[in-house]
Image 1 (cartoon, rainbow, N blue to C red):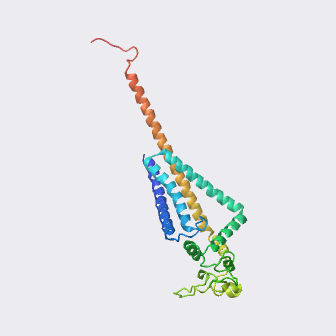
Image 2: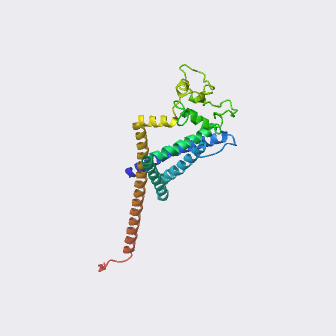
Image 3: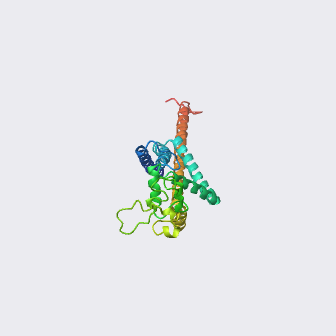
Amino acid sequence: MRGYRAIKYTLFICCYVFWVVSAVLIAVGIYAKIAKETDVVDTLTVDPALLLIVVGSVMFLITFLGCFGALRNATCLLKMFLGILASVLFLQISAGVVGYLFTDMVMERTEKLMMKAIIRYREDQDLENAIDFIQKKCCGVESYKDWSQNVYFKCSDTNPSLEACGVPFSCCIRLQNQTVRNTMCGYGKQQLEERLAQKNIFTTGCLQQIIWWAKNNLLLVAGLTAGLLLLEVLMIGLAAAQICSIKRVELTKKENAARSQSQRKESYWYPAFANFDDE
């Protein structure tokens, strides 16, 4: 009985933690969505707020099934939770295998997605903040001149923008003891050669920087990935163990009920060759 309770409440606590996290993600996404301008283009791949809402909603649904199913001993909900989580685990492993086998294709798709984000840099405040956060040691996708793909930074004589031939201020190298950020530091930097531009801005693309960071922190990336997968496997195992325990208890109850019913039926009849001696 103690083992069953340990399985039940361990699964409940794990699901409850992720349930709270998913609720926070949904709340942050909704707040960011409301705070946006109404005329921005909403796309899942380049809209952080919409991505938070979708991911949070999926997590909320899955963990709710786990929480309620574990707490109420509902085998139907636990089976749904186990099936969905097993499917998610399978998709994650499949994505990892496909990414390893088709690295070039994945890199090409990633480059296109990042370039699409650069094109829509000024259209979404959340996307703009996300790109500025990433560009702390890099600029653009492949190089700083990728910003010419954006209509505001396009290097053309017909571009009336003040930021023409420039890059965002997040590409600029921040000086030591600099308290006020110069938001005009990237103006005109696309017109400079790389050896001259790298004195003031980062010229390396962010895609190369991300790959370099992943290679240099391979143990950290592998540890986080393995930890997430092991946690999912643990929750699948706990759900399966609780389902088996519930079924075992239900089977025992049915056997006891059948046995007691059989004993009651036998008590209605006198045993054969019973000795009824008169007193």
